[in-house]
Amino acid sequence: MKKTICRTLCLFFLVILLIPMLSACKDGRTMYELGDYKITEKEYNYLMGMFKKKVLVTFDSSLTDESLDLELSPGVTLGKYLEARYREGFEQSIISLLYSQSLFDELGLKLTDEELSHINATATAVVAYYGNYSVKEFNKIAKQYGFDDEAMRSVYEMQYKENKVREHLLGVNDSKITNDDRESYYRTAYLRYQTLIVNTLYKLHTDSSGEVKFVLLDEYEKAERERLVLELRELLVNKNMDFDYILLKEDKNLSYMELWEKYSDDKFYPSGLYETANPDAEQLSKSNVLSAAYESKPGEVKVVTAKRYFEGDSSLEGGDVEIKPGDYFEYGSIFVQRLELDSGAYDRRESEIFFGDAFESGVANYTYFEHLTKHQDSLPYEVMISSKIADYTFASVKANELDYYYFAGGGEE
Image (tube, rainbow, N blue to C red; front, side, top):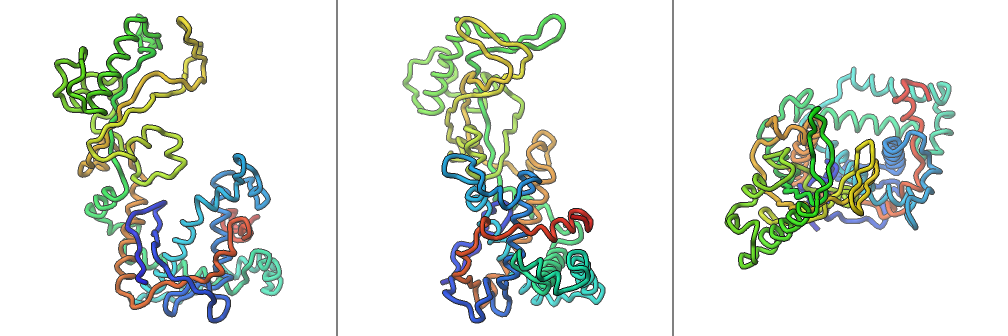
């Protein structure tokens, strides 16, 4: 069975589609194997425990192993949520680490005496801090987390090698990244769309003092805006040229962008909006606009309900409508069109809000994984995974408090 590393990124990790499973490993301790390169059970425990701790801290620094029993929703604990959302990313990071060890040797890289000394000094400092300079005492503590001094040192060396491979390929501070790399990542990782917004509830009014206020539409204005929604739906979504158009009678042949320019109540981003092309379930559940764009083909238009929070300092009332400060209310319709990606959007000032540091980080990860993919394709063997991996979950592996607090706290827990 030939392995394949999918080029579509999720959380900027490799996606492994087909990997053989080993029912048992030769020494009973190997979890991953790539030719002569291995991840042992203790190394796996170390890496999973550290990954788990970092994930918990991103949610809330007070979370502990016991917190995984917290119920987020009926039948869904924090532990189950983390497993569903982050487990694949963790396993993919292990694959990346393993391939980097092979590539390190293929590139003829070496760790200098100074680098080896630094690795040893770091491990020795952690042992000294928690084990009072005794490896034996340290291992008594580390055993609770599923690893020992030897596994910790081994992981340090593997991570050092991975960083050295990355720097060799991408340059110091990713200085070798090119515009072609950015464009390639952009076209893999992003989608572009536009939103034509029709407000059927209120309008913005600027009074004599220059203050902008929400003002509810009167009956005539509301009826006209609702008619516009109906006609735009028939024209853009249903492609019905035979509908009895009134407001759009002279505009039936206008393009979506021409209609956007003429009728949209929001024209902040004339070039469109940009989002990740692979949003997770949580992102999609929070944005019906993003869901519509994600589920569309370029040129297709979908309509969703427009919703927003009312940020006024007093209630907005009129007729049978009352909107209080902090309310999340419906105010109209949004016609979402998925657009073709335009070259170099990440370099333009009008769209820079959608990119930034996260984009540059994504480019670097994507480019690095492209190198790993090429290396993978050149190898005569593939990754093997122990069936024991099924016994491990974020709930069963203890969060690595040792290294995390040592490094994060500068040697203080």
